[in-house]
Image (cartoon, rainbow, N blue to C red; front, side, top):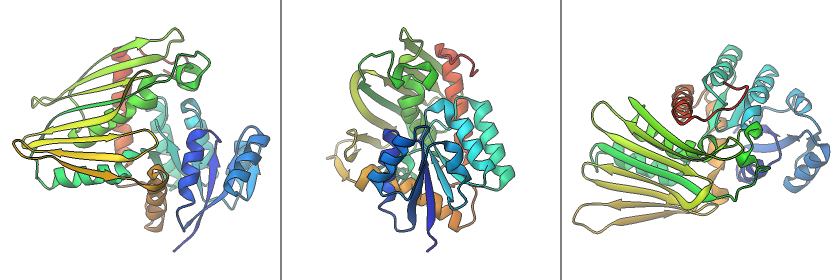
Length: 327
């Protein structure tokens, strides 16, 4: 088994979770970390037993011994950091959203394809055991056609204009940060909608505090997605099929739950508790693809990231969500 040296670009909370997961994989070595603050990089390196710590992203991506870069910076930096990594010959897995809009996503994919390097958006759910099981059941025809979906990702973040969640300069707003999850679920199980309507509650900073989305398909199917930083409603996805319903849910930082509900029969419940929240599955997919000579993942291909960002762009336009200088 080939071993890959990983570089962690960014030292925030998501980078910590991802690094904890990487330690579970025998073919992954967290070789280097880069931050714009050398002290933070050294502290991160100490916490995760990382060989090298750099005080700039440029130094990290120029290290010839780094094979794969995990981009874990705020959304508006994804384009710059990914292009810099690719142009220095590094394969990339970049946190969601891949970028701020379609134009930026297209630039990143074009650069990766031109360079012959791997690029994947770090979409967590499709690699999780509960999600895989739900797809297996639906694809197996046990429930029949998916007719409707409803998903939400909500928690009370506490309003603070200085927080990343409400800071437009850092890509703040519920849609791109957490609304992307139920929207991604709907695209994954139902496909791209034919009509989109959306509404947002805009915070004083200009970021969307809450966003509600309605999808309609020409064959009559419908779906709804909701995200909020002010309502502690939890995380769940309901999939309504011709022959029954599936319910996916999880508690933040804990296990996953899949409930199968058949008409007039007892429900079935499945519980999954992957180690380290399951981020290792994304990393394993990257290395598996590289072992097979692939430049994109068949689970989260470039085409899915393009479809997702196009839908997010359409929602933003409908809901009046704007990022000055990024549109």
